[in-house]
Length: 614
Image (tube, rainbow, N blue to C red; front, side, top):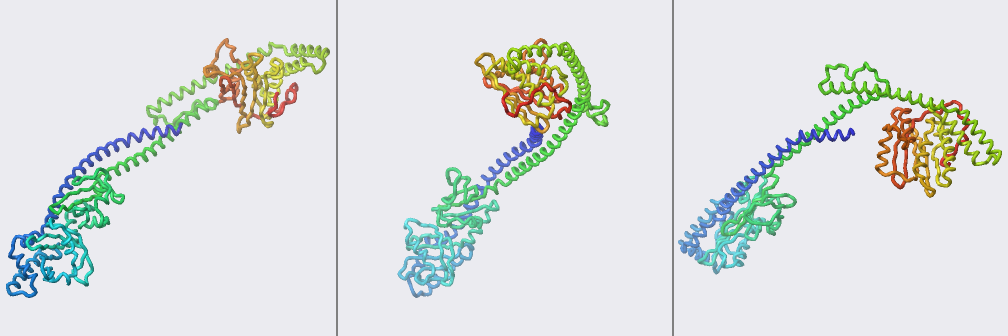
């Protein structure tokens, strides 16, 4: 009960305190989510526009040089003539210096350009390289660009590759992005090597989020260059970048969507740029985008947990307070029932401290106390009247007349049939039972005497129902030393026989089990009779505490129930359990009281043993 009360109060307080926090958290979360989604679209569009301008700017840095050699036949012709001759005249030397100045200025003016090669088909396999002037392919350290040029489809005028090479023999290889542009008149190519570190720094300048990864790939998805955030993600450079991502929905380019990489979630933006079909990818960790939303959710969770702890402590305090008051009231009620309550005592020392609720409760308690005391007085009067009536009825019977008559009958039977006659045995049993019953009913007797009296009564019943009834006992010998009321068993055994045997074919086994508990004797009387249906059982239980004038139905059971309640304060009386067709069990408890040390009744025969049939 206390636990149920505690949980009920906890849930009530928890709803009151946590519901506003939850509602506010939901509203803020929805608002933040809408704002974040709008910001994602705006920033994705901004990143795409700035990134496309940056990539077009980088990739167009060699457009001016390509235009010079493709549109000016004089310049391209002079370069072709220079590459085909081993010795140069004055004019050719001036032209060579002019072309060298143009190429060197391109490298100087654009910090992301590492070196430029110009190759026109010639008889001596000569090409021009910035910082090295004119040299032969055989003596060059980097020749991989020529293989790419020769293997490329002649119809492709420009393309981009990521290559590893070294500019000098003593230098270790490094990686660069190489841009190829064909020179249409002399079957040549303009090669521009772009510095990856510089390109990565340019990509870092357009980041919208601290951990945003920006990647540029070629048309096949191979990584060309990326900002440091993307480099730390350690993509496989030999595989398509998109194939290394796990898409949460159907993959579509140019649209923001959620992807997963190595267990982390990212918001992806994928766009195609320029004639080179380069792909611009932006990967933003979802935790960075929804950081504000997560903070709101965390605050709501902390608020709910705080409310739960507060409600838990408050509910515990209120429960203890309420049940302490209840226990105090129960103590008062118990004292009233035992008659130890002092009428002049008060529930609270200072009645000025009482609020309206406690004032009403105080008046109710005082009214209950007065009514309960009046009820106890009425019950005492009724009990005294009942005892007087029993004594009056008992005095109306002349015990000497009955016993003398039974003795005369017994002598006549012995004369004719001897001492072992069954009729003589019945008279002895009847005489013992009458003497036992007519003694003072208010005086407790040892349990052994009560058991023996029940056994003798059952022997008489066996003459009425030969072979149809059996009585089994189950008890410890130690139980016999405790005192009980007279005639507890006999009316209940009679009731079991009466409602179990209705014809010569019926059988009934009665078992009386006495359990020695810590502070009481628990007694069960079970029979294998016809039992009762649910309606009959309900009516019997209801009638135990209800007086029905003129009714003789199960009067023995009702009398035992009333005697237990009146004789033992706080005793609940009889408990009846029955199943139709299987039998009935009647249970009750009596407190342990030591055996009366007075002289035992001399009329009872030796008592039976534990668990023996009667």
